[in-house]
Image 1: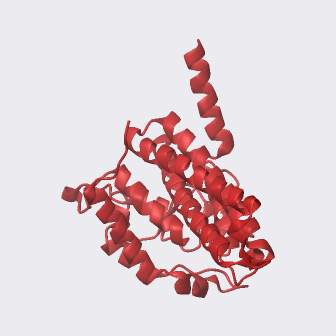
Image 2: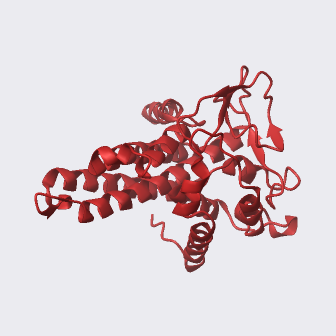
Image 3: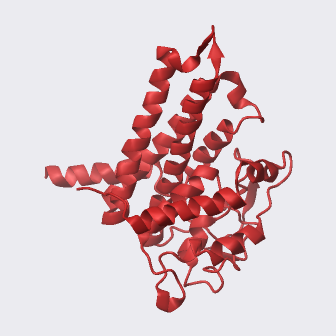
Length: 298
């Protein structure tokens, strides 16, 4: 099967990338960090995303949405992952058409799911699920505030599948970006009078990052078309690995400077770690794939 993007899909991808570059580029990312302070959601940006149709891509036009599909939502979330766009993006996307104002960005939604960890609880206008007994956690990602709930809701199965797929799309965008950062640094950083990309060890790191990105991209795009639980589980596993391992290898390419606040690389790793804990994570995905393999063997 070939999963090539159509002209309309490429135009959507370009449009979302342009919007995010203008409204949440590196300058805005650095400004949002507020080291030592709790992150705040940019409500103006949230409404602008709603106006642009970011949250209503899958909503029918008759209901005020864009009238596209899951593949297009995946492309948009891939771009969000590239720039580390903060906020409960998936929860608000899933709430479009269900919670008034969610599709337009007027209402911020978060969800309590089977993971027991809730993102952006304090900023939400609407919480889907029971958040009783929520306690703030110290988040490894400075742009993702977290709470833990005592008795997490198992959540709707369809929502869990879509959450896993859209998380995979965000992870894919992050993996693609750290691949670019690694390649850029390898070309420009010099040691012993040569770019470090001339050394085999660095070449192998960069090549490994690229291979994992392309494997994850094929799996994520395919899962967006088939919407098969097994395909989604496989895509999530590959995307999580591409983002987490890719960011770690990118850090190694950058050396010690990758861990400093002057660099963005560690921010991509921290966000990838947080996303990897969402529903559909490694253990759950492995169980789905194992069950499918056992069923085929019988």
